[in-house]
Image 1 (cartoon, rainbow, N blue to C red):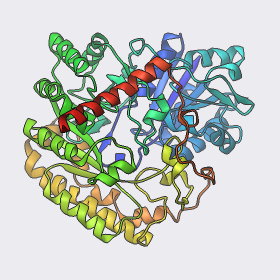
Image 2 (cartoon, helix red, strand yellow):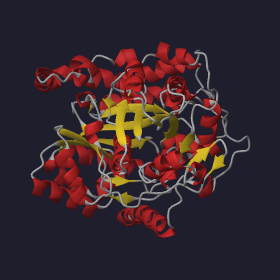
Image 3 (cartoon, rainbow, N blue to C red):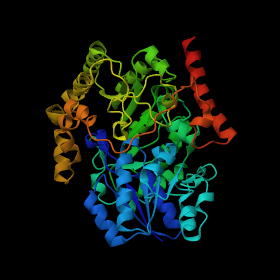
Image 4 (spheres, rainbow, N blue to C red):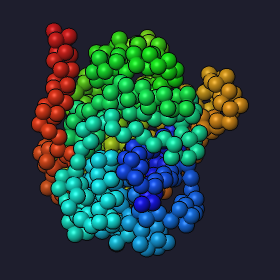
Length: 512
């Protein structure tokens, strides 16, 4: 069967800071290819809509699958599905991915027949059986499959992550993928899932607080296949278990692989496993992203971050001492006033880290979607991108965006534009000579992307597709069955929760 897998276009923040290869879709593509199908991958982050329409006409796939990891891409995917059915009426269209898994019925209703099914949960284990059932029948009986007629059994979880390496050869225009100065940059996965349970996040609810690993040997094999000099480690929390990070590092050394790396982790993990991060510094780790989320104790408790401000600030000192370039995130709540924004601005101006702000956004899959008492001010999917306010603002909405962008502009003033050129002139020049323009273009785009007129204007656009609102009666704490996409085996879940308990106990013992 001829299969075309499609990734939608960039979200707002991706217009500036990064553009990552569609790693999950590459893994699904490889699973389908191993099952004997002819597979192509099309990424609208690096190609345009007209390119996609030409691809349909030339390849004429029998099946098209869309990746939908972010709610803000819902309208785009719906329109693409409808256009696909118009051009190829007999083509089977399915949609999967993180956000699709939380709103399957809404997507089918919006699509009005243009989407044949939604795939809930991980794509690798179910895509081959789905492609077989498209030909032979019985789609509605498959695990994780939702059709207009109903839903099948619970989704399948891929327990052996070693089985499917990503089909990187199917990604076109790979030179377009980058993150900051790492240009070009590939992506790689070491682990999947997160054992923590932050109330604003849907990573743990999707995976059911499970945590799975890829073996060092397979990671080494995958890294050796990557042609790019840089790699972004996509794990939700890197190096939770120090022994795993050390084993992967030894495999990289054994193979003689030399790259620069960027990863995301937690402050308490960095504090606890300093020797691992120091080892990886020698291997090429240069950049890390830390989700501080809040500067105060109350803010951290509200989102159940399970870390203290003291530990967060200690972790920043450790990262500075080790010589890492650190980006960090603060969640701006819609109830912030001028004084609160000013406090954050002053703090961001006084630290060397790259301070980025996202906007507190309840969305399906998060606990806050079911517990937030404030009524949403918009149900426009496009605004659920953590760059827009969808809860009532204390300030007038336009003024909120002015303060938000003014605070984010600290990043621009310190780390982009001429400030960045002064510090990275040699790197920028080398990249330009190599034909890599992503990083240099990024330096001058801040005001085009982060603009209060643009963000406020997004609220005034005509809305074609609206999200179904959360239940009127909100819950104090919803049960896992209402949150999880994948319900893990009890032993796996206990092990994941034990990881968090271990960190808590270690912090308590250290405090005594």
